[in-house]
Length: 201
Picture 1 (tube, one colour):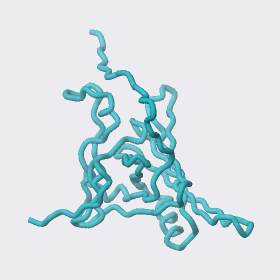
Picture 2 (cartoon, one colour; picture 1 turned 135 degrees about the vertical axis):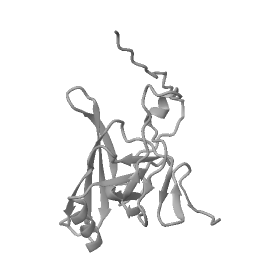
Picture 3 (cartoon, one colour; picture 1 turned 60 degrees about the vertical axis):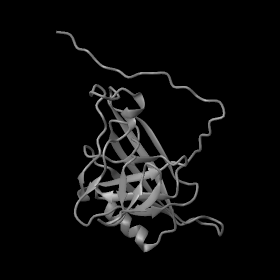
Picture 4 (cartoon, helix red, strand yellow; picture 1 turned 180 degrees about the vertical axis):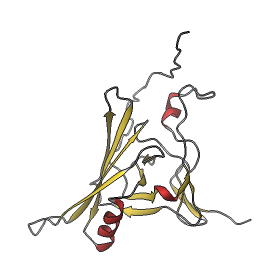
């Protein structure tokens, strides 16, 4: 019996004049993993109906949250934070997704978040400058958050707190187009970036 592997490779065209904006937007959404009842899923490469290579990087479904649990957010320092990914493991079977989320200042709320996140498992959702939302964290692996800070020295220096985020995944920072609930009725629609309110029945 021989093994067969389905692939979805296709050409990737770079269109002349296409705008590619670096960096991420200021608002970083987060929730502790214990508050997530159901995770969105990455499609299997050989799954029936998956015929587009781009779909392999797109999470399917929504984050379903436990009762009375919602996403929070952290506003980051302008033009300072970034996200990277690289292969992990001898056979490169996983991806190491990482971010440096930099916050201006060292307020007590910032330090209080760092104290909790240091030993917790947090899922983060950030937005690229082109509007696309991506996820750091998943159901399978723990997402590590390591806080560090710098008071600066000279009068013109910046006081900052950096949250170094690291999580292994099967996909480089997968794309998310579902909902991020901020309250019982209010959510971010990650398909278009708009904050919307559900209309009651």
